[in-house]
Length: 325
Image (cartoon, rainbow, N blue to C red; front, side, top):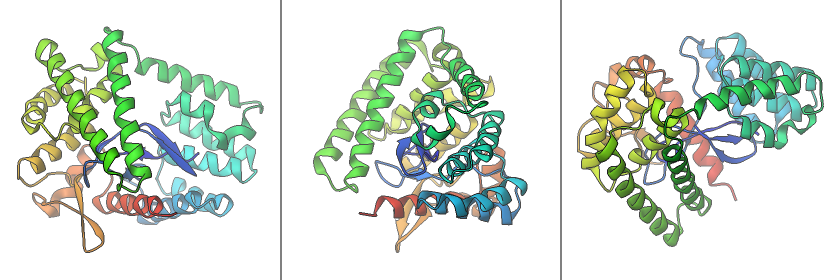
């Protein structure tokens, strides 16, 4: 299925073309975020960016065959991301174009696609699994994914991942109710509070769990729990400089740092820098108060994020999809 980068108020786990599923980064329209579109290559042409968005829209509606020419335009125009390539592979497989699907899948692997679990279970790729050429790609993805779990403290890594799964579970439940289930809201608050107390204890004893200690995936999970610790803004503020230092020494993600920077700013009544925190105004998603709005896209580009308008459009598409019966 189509790969979506989730931001359940903050994430890249993986989802697919015609269904849910998650994949990590971050946002903040409410306690539960929404999903954002796959990141677009910042050097891509406007036409390519538009084609990518239209292709994703068609794919999401199950119109796989007409999405393919648009994916080709997007790729040739510079939108060369693992997510776009994976989405195109799914579309080609569903459109009964297996040779093209394998080409797209190879591109996704070359661009760093590393979610073997999702790839192995993705129903969109069923028609490809017995074809020559598929198995080596799956093995490459599995090898890349394994590196993300390498950790000096595997016990702590596993507990972080378990708690992240629970975090996503309660958010998916609330999303499934179109954010109306009061019991789901209460459960989300309870899980966030419990995770915050636990992680505060871990960090107080051993500091920030970076890539070397808990692996890339474990460190991502720690960041996600902090991003969702809105009931304890002082804790989020305390972690921010720790994450800054981790990023500086190659132990953290600049994108994740951008999301937490904005989260802390908004939660302390200050303007945000990157526009990652959105709210609904007159039926449209807009960024909460921005510092230097004219320079926001330059700041986003510096940390590897697409333009603010693309980000907003991604939220709008996901919101529309979530409201369909």
